[in-house]
Amino acid sequence: MIDHAGAVALAQRALAHLEVGTTDQADDVMRVPVEEYLDPGRWRRELDTVFRRVPLALALSAELPAAGTYKALDALGTPVLLSRGRDGVVRAFLNVCRHRGAQLCPVGTGTRHRFRCPYHAWVYDDHGSLVAVHKPGTFGDVDTDALGLRPLPAVEGYGFVWVSLTPDRPIDLDSWLGDYARELERLELDRWHVYEQRELDGPGWKVAYDGYLESYHIQALHRTTFAPTSTSNLMVVDAFGPHQRILYPAKSIRTLRDLPVEEWDPAPHCGTVYTVFPNVSVAGAWEGHGVVSRIMPGPTPDRSRTVQTIVTRVPPVTEEDRKYTAEFSELVERGVLEEDYRTGFDVQAALSSGANTHFVFGRNEMALQHQRRWLERLLADAK
Image 1 (cartoon, helix red, strand yellow):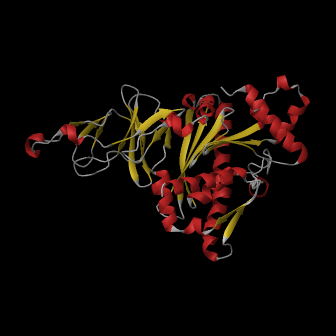
Image 2 (cartoon, rainbow, N blue to C red):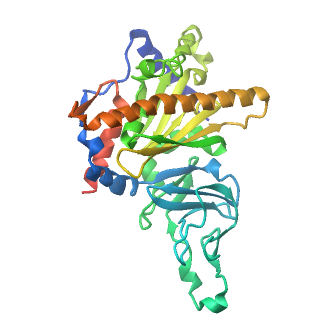
Image 3 (cartoon, rainbow, N blue to C red):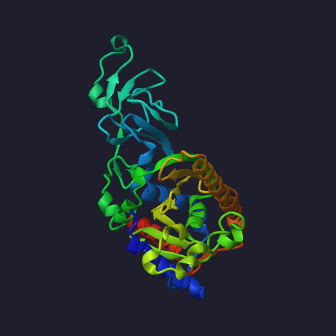
C-alpha cells in the first residue's frame, strides 16, 4: 500500500507551492534541437540503443491473470508472444513458427496452453517447445529440441512483464529499477484488474510522451476534461535513476489545510504519474482507477502507437461503479486522443517548417528535462 507518511509529505510539498504559486523547478531552461524530433538516423539509434537494450514493460501482469493466458503483440516490428505457463511463470518468445516463419497468434490476448501454427500446423507448448510436427512421416526427420520458439529474456515483477527485445541481453531488474522498485511495489499493480484496453495513433514518440511529463499545458489544452479538477503548472517531482514519480495535485488539495495532518487522506487530492523509462506512464494509481499508457515508436519517426489500459483496484460490479469507470475511461480517451494527440499531430506536422531550430523546455518542465537527459545519456553510452 501507499506509504501514508510519504504521501502526506508529498501533499505538503504541493500545498506549499500552491500557497505561493510556485512549482518544482529545474536549475535552468533547456534547449533541444528540433532536428532530434525529425532525423531518421537519430530515431533509429533511439530504437536500437535504447528501446532494444533496456527492459521494456510490455504488459501488465493483470493482462495474463492465470495459467494458460497469453498476449501477442508487435514491439517495434518484432512479433512477441507472452505466455503464462501451467507453472505460473510468464515467458516471452518471438511469435514466429520455426518451420516457415508464420506468426502463431494474431495480436491480442486469449487462453491456450498450446500454440498451433496456422500455416502448417506445427504445435508448440507454453514453454515454447515444439511438441508436434504435422504429418511427420512425410516431412522427414527434424531435431524438435532445436526447433522450439526463440525465447526473449523476460521477468515478471512489480505488476509488469518486462522483456528485452535483444535475445542475448538478460534483464537485471534490480539494477534497472533500483530504489524505484519499492515505489512501484507500493502501487500493488499485480492486484489490479484490466477494465478496458485500446490502441491510439499518435505523433512521433517523443512528441507524444512529452505531454505526459508536464502540467504546464493543463489549463490551456484541457479546459473541459482535466482542468476543472486539476491544477495547472504545479508539479512535485522525484527522480529514481531514469524513472520519475510526479504529483499533479487536484484543486481539492486545498481542503487538507483545514484538517490536522494526522487526519489527512492525500490520495483523493493527488493526481500521480509514475513513469517507467523510456515510455510508460502509470497515472492515478493512488485511488481505485488508473490508466497505464505505453507509448511505442511507430514504423516511421513521425508516428507512434499508444496502448492505453484502464485499470481498477477492484472490478466494477455495481451499476454505480460501472458508470463511474466508463465515464473515467471516456474522459481519459478524450483528453489524450482529442486534445493531447491532436495537438501533437499539429506539432509534428510543423516541425519541418523551419519556424524553430530549438524547443525550449522551461524550468517548470522539470520532468521533461530529466527524461531528455537520460535519453541523451543512454545514447551516448552506446557509442
